[in-house]
Image (cartoon, rainbow, N blue to C red; front, top):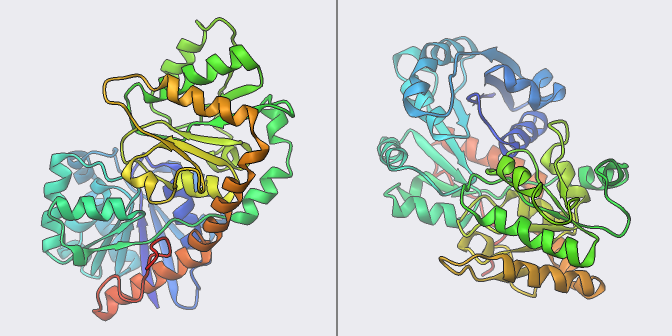
Length: 387
């Protein structure tokens, strides 16, 4: 029996929530026992996940390295009582705290896993990960090859990294589509719903995207933009929307509508940021037969090829992106039927790459590799890489 501990701080996103749910609910109970620790916000993981796992409340102030030290006593007690061998975390402070607590206080812990969805790390986090990887305690699970390459550039040992693509629940997507969520969001039958994915980017890219949609809404009518929870600059866009000549292009769902539901019913996923951000929303969009439109960043170009399974455009440094975004969206409005080929190609690739079963199985293989002394990536291949 392999005992796993999933550790969360007070701030975690929809990707981490879904990942922990998949692993907690689908790892075979005959081989794995899971325990979850974190703040009161763990209720968002869902009743089934919490029912299948033991749960512990610990003092974890937030996603900062120094603040993570406050959680050390609670993590140590949790590890001693549940006697797990592997701690799985989703942010650098949590990985740091778990590693620090794996000494005398928690001698049963043999490995710490950090799962990353974005390659952007501060200088302090890079130094910390280098130190942890050199000690052989830490393994980093990367959702894209871009993240793995960036970590190697930062000095993390390649042997300490492995690429596991996120899983997508195709059944959930179909089930959500059969609900009346589009109508509840205020979308008419002919509206083109453009979703901006959650992003940590704080620049003007999202505002440019909203301006582009507002222009099309003013000129053509049935184009709406959806701002999900977790989008940086969300409040700024809401304030700006009150100044546009023809309001009504903006939809701001409440906290009770998770991102995965919005992706299931939207028509276009617009990725305006030029940074190499998370691509989990792109994976879900491909599976939901949405059209992915975005800046040709390294991370996005791993999954999307222009006019093959989506649409890409170049980011012009120092220039606003309103014009290229508006141009692509205008073409979509006038040629929706001609884009079906791109959408079908994307969905077919999503079936091959973003299986929940593969996601869970590859994590199970990773856990077993670590405890058996094998390389973390032994027997784990990336289905998105051809050749």
